[in-house]
Length: 534
Ligand code: ADP
Image 1 (tube, rainbow, N blue to C red):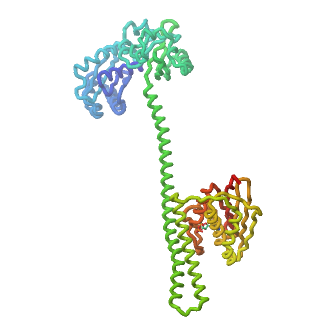
Image 2 (cartoon, rainbow, N blue to C red):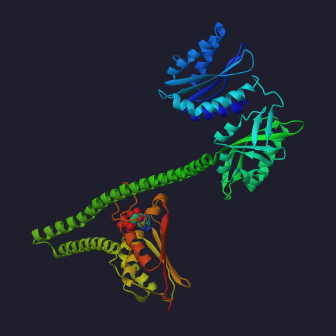
């Protein structure tokens, strides 16, 4: 019953535009707040304190209570600018009920507004009259046809009409005896269309089992049962209700079920949307963090590139300056000493020539890379014997090999292996690889060059017993300007040789890989496709 009081109070509150409302019960034994609506926090506590004070002082007259109307103490403190109090007549000796409404509006409870909600207060009075202070007298609820009567009074009718919830009465088997108009309209039905149906007919298929279990609880128990039900409106759309149901005793063993359903579809939809948005938020955050990591990586790459470029500029300047210094120095010596012996002049001339060649090689390497990068390099293809080319490359390095007393072993096929490609560029590739082996192999080291003609490709392996490449550097070895940092060793280079090698091998649709171990040596494996027509 108290639940119904609360509902009616809520309706009166809404109709009267009140922010808070209270139903007080006052009698000699107990007094307190029977039901409340709206902001029940601070004002609720304040009013309770006020009532206790009045009761303790024994000064519990109606006049004293009416002083609450001004709400000098509790209401003003809680920013309510107008209030309303009315005694609801009780037939029980010594018991009074009061309805108190509070509003933030200054003149909220004026005559016009009062006229709006007064009829509901009258109905409330009737309900109160039947209430004996704690429970309903048994047998007093009586449901007849489409209206609800309490002791012959049409007391719940106004509640029915004003309620913005689905209010319904079922018989003991679950058939709908009565439903309020608003509730029926929520489902796009007229009341007459619903009445007589079994409630389970309105329940969505997937929810029928849960609903049946809840209904069993209602008829088994005297308690108020709350559950969620998915009902279908006239057009088959799902509407979610939170339903409060209770069994009401009738005459004899018969009983009815009264229920109030709150449409919580919007709430559930919002909850669903919020959880959907949460998933999207998590996804967006994940993408943002990936983007952050990516841009961080790009920043690191840019910083690294910048470092490599500066290193390259300083290396290249060094590489250019050294041969230039020799050329200038030896040329000046020759021209300043006219009596220089011929053999010495010849030796100096040769140094000048070699240094000039070194300079030209360096400049050519740089030009090659820049042409390759600009896509301005074209392959001039022809069929040629790669084994023969390998022999030529070895011969051109013979002097350097001898200078370092490196033992070179060849394991080459006796037959020619014909490939289709740019002979000159492949020659540069092989030269670069062999040059590196010679450059990074100490005195009296070993180099093994082998070639294996496979079905569709030729596999060339150049292995040395040189200083090797640290594992961490291997993945970067084909990057522009990348040189392994070896503090204390002055091995000349630009970090461009292998870039050229890789790009030319790629243009030939070949494959190159490097395996290496520090202080043990390096193996370069090169695969080039054979000419399919040969
Ligand atoms: P560089 O002109 O510096 O030789 P490369 O692109 O040819 O440039 O080689 C890049 C780096 O790879 C070299 O600086 C060197 O440290 C390493 N490297 C290449 N080949 C060998 C090898 N056979 N042994 C040891 N290190 C090598």
